[in-house]
Amino acid sequence: MAEFLTGLKRTKMCGEFRSNDIGKKVVAMGFVAKYRNLGGIQFIDLRDRTGIVQVNFSASDHPEVYAKSEAIRNEFVIAVEGMVVARGEKNINTALPTGAIEIEATSLRILSEADTTPFLIAEDIKAGEQLRLKYRYLDLRRQTLQKNLIVRDQIMRATMDYMARKGFVHIETPMLGKSTPEGARDYLVPSRVHSGTFYALPQSPQIYKQLLMISGMDRYYQIAKCFRDEDLRANRQPEFTQIDLEMSYVDDIEDVMKVAEGLIRNIFKTTIGYNVPKKIRRIKYAEAMDRFGSDKPDTRFGLELINLTKLMKSVGTEFAVFQNNIKKGHSVRAINAKGLAGYTRKQIDALQDVVKEYGAKGLAYIAMKPEGISSPIAKFFAEDQWSALIKAVGGETGDLILFVADKDKVVYDALGALRLAIAKKENLIPQDTYDMLWVTHFPLYAYNEEEKRLEAMHHPFTSPVTADLKYLDKKPLKVRAKAYDFVINGQEAGGGSIRIHSREIQEAMFRRINLTEQDITDRFGFFVEAFRYGVPPHGGLAFGLDRLVMLLTGTDNIKDVIAFPKNQSAACLMSDAPSEVEPKQIAELSIEIKK
Image (cartoon, rainbow, N blue to C red; front, side, top):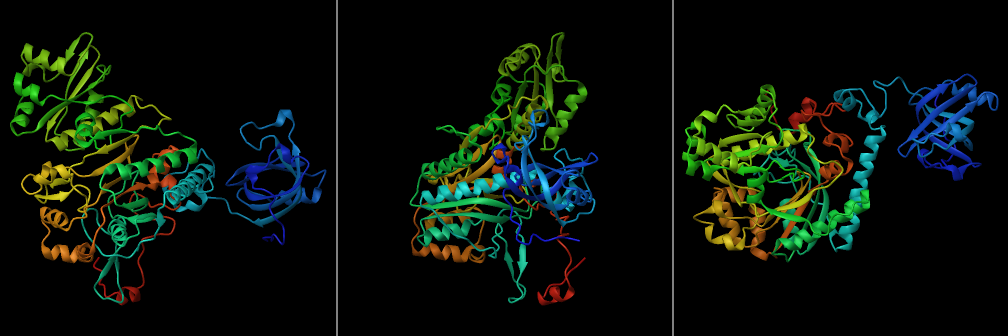
């Protein structure tokens, strides 16, 4: 039967006891992580989120307490009174901060008994992810996950401290808002009061934070919950958290970037003691794509892309794949994987699979082996053409040259993914380091191949570069945006832009993405209306809190940094959400369910 504390107070948390507590009478409480009965004496490891302390129960010194302790099993919740004693030189556990001491129990209260858990709660856990998600509250007892959540808390507190010092005001924006579909799918919430209408959960607080600038709040920030109904992967969840900020009277990206860099420095220094460099590199979008095939480049290793389009135009080749793509205005690019000429055909086929995932039709290669060149495309090149090609890629004995020819987007995506795959396989990425950079000067528009129209590359409130306004009507794809992304180790940690504050430019932006007057009114009417009453120049940025925690804790799975995450099907296995609801609830919402 469960006992009660009845006035008993915890002296310290388990992981806080040290040698300077020797000789003190203390009270410790927690979960039983392990028990070992050696006959006449029983040791238990008592655990809470701060760590483990060893407790011993002696049959000779306290026979009644020892007898009671024999009922203890893993995950029982207990309270122990006792004396802190030294373990002795031979028994010190150097792996534990509390390893020099233990508590000799003089009384025991069993606060809660526990059934045998579905899996052993240990750091080297063997249970599969699905089972651990079902019993998430048990998985969260592991110190690794608890440390991740503590780092998350530290980041949030470091953020609030820094933003307050910089004069930003924390303001909450609505969870129930208007659907403005332009990007990922919204999560919709039906209204009972207004039959047939829906709220949308926010994909970001974008419109609201701009309205706060229009309202004169000047400097806003929020640690905001956001929702996107999209396919999931290792670093994506349907609900996620942003560190969101916006500031008025800025017309230049430097103003926002300076605040953002200061925030990142404060977070890294406060949380893990890491000093972010005083100067953070910057790279323009066009250069990032050309060199790395990605707008979030990981520059901790080489394997940069080599553009061979002009060369192939000038020297020529009978290789139809190259020539046909060049005639269509596409590109030919390569990666020189130094020292990997010994890859087997099976290994090269695996690389083929990587590029095909990104739309490439194939992967040509040259293996420059010591005994001679091995390549299925060699026969399509004359000697002078071949020499020019090898020289252009810096080919040497031992190199493996890999080519993709297609539309720029396909080539960038395919080779960008390929360089990452090779780097991971060959352990080319240095660990325990943070590679930080800004990517700037993104295109304002992207062309949607499926819908045959322009769309905003970021969102339709992003300001164009002033010098590019002349291209807005006739050459919109040449227009660059006052947009910027912050990249850490090849991950987009944050991004933002200077916003449009001119009614004329905002209207032109909407026209260019084929929104009719009715579309604009239906989707953004209240926002456009606000532009009639004075808009200060403003800009902002949002950091992904979950990704920051991932980077700071060294995990590659976003589920490790969220207390109660969803699985890859956007379901909570623990609470069985989403779930069916009572017919009465459906009827109240005037909704008909079709299965």
